[in-house]
Image (cartoon, rainbow, N blue to C red):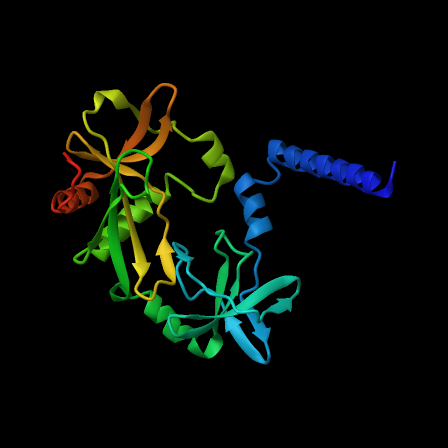
Length: 264
């Protein structure tokens, strides 16, 4: 056997042993899955220094994802992590694309601009709000009907996001794979005459941040539901009814839109 084959076999054995050790810790309750994933993924420094300048993270909320960032060839290698200088909304930042709690990485703002940047991205006036209406499961296609909501109530938007976040963690691989449907009620999809998905999200006016666009909602028989899970084999929607006060606001909002899709 050549050396490459020996290394591959040894590496595979190490992966198996490590996986077994992790599984044993999980089964024994020594390390919760969420904590294990968090420790492996979220351990990033709060500050980074490059060329004598200090950068600090935490200037934007956890529900915002960095997007549309353009990297030049310039980069810094610091403690095994790659950082790229980027301009975000007029602020000098560093982007570490392979760290943090999302696949979009982590942004650091120049320390002298940090307070101004934090205030900027905490102001609802610096964001645009959207509602996307689609036939089932085809979001982001030419059939999507997207509306900018100029009079969105930011507090109601946050209320819906905070409520749905408790029922779906988009970064929890186990939850996404297994599907926690214990608290959801089933609805037989073919019994619904017309069914459409609703997605509510906001994007910073500079185009550098967006909220999660994967939470699916639907208006069925005059009620707003969060779609927790869909069973294609049984054709069942597993849904959770949105609290009445929040639901009423978004139902009225959707009904006010001039959409080609018939929403009841």
